[in-house]
Length: 338
Image 1: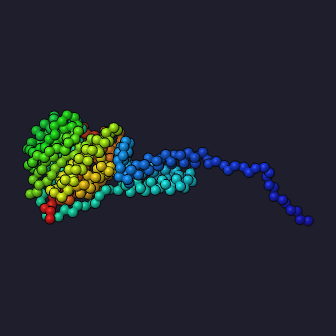
Image 2: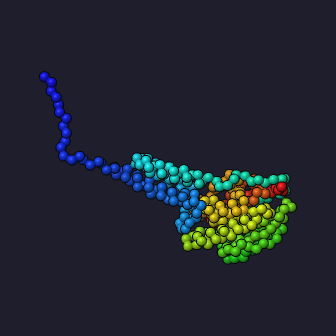
Image 3: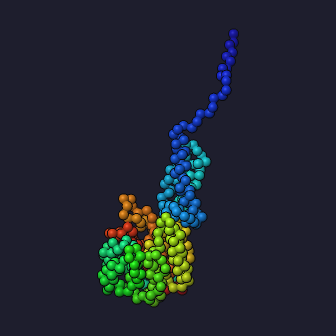
């Protein structure tokens, strides 16, 4: 005799679906929070805007934002949130692409080399690193030295100590961060400084039979409340670069208070068809600031920019006791041109 077993069907309404596990919910929220800042910053970088505080400050961290974006993707995958994971991967890819070096990796210099020279740019932090810079100049023997935050005492000490090797100079006198000086082994012809809160002296030098335009850049930093001033002063540096785009060779160096991730700095490069020497030497992302924190420097804001008349032999970064910036020492070849 066959026995048929009937299926037992529970009576009553169906039970509600189970809610996500607390661990997945936490991972979802963490992923969303982690990806938010990289998404906004990478978006501003793509749009070419420095916007308002805190965007310019956050742009200084752009290469490092690949870390939270990557963590967000992993957490979203662990929480099985595929749309969120896909968005985090997209943000990671965009951030990594934006972190690539900006601009061409070579110049179009032509003709024979007419001069081999070295350029050193240093922020001496209110003159505190004056002695260290003096020792570095004597050791490294650059022909051109760009010095930011060099007060009158600093300028006097440098010109006295380096009177034989660098007898020529262009100076903007000022206390604290307002003073700047360009020291030169070559004779200089004075040029008006760029109007700014901090000194941006300039001159023309006769180098290898060519007139070379020299300019020290030191715009205000993009502190909260003065982002417009920062952009305005970088705009004046851009105007200088544009005015010399098709003229004599240009050496524009200093503490730009901006990295390649800031649209205002990229505008300077584009306006003057200039090249960041560190980029040409394969060191575009070497941080130069700040040196006085427990953590190592995280952003490159000190630059040596060159026109197409130069080729870069090498770039080195020097630590100067007393300064919160690393100095940039660049070896250059000046070509005769067409």
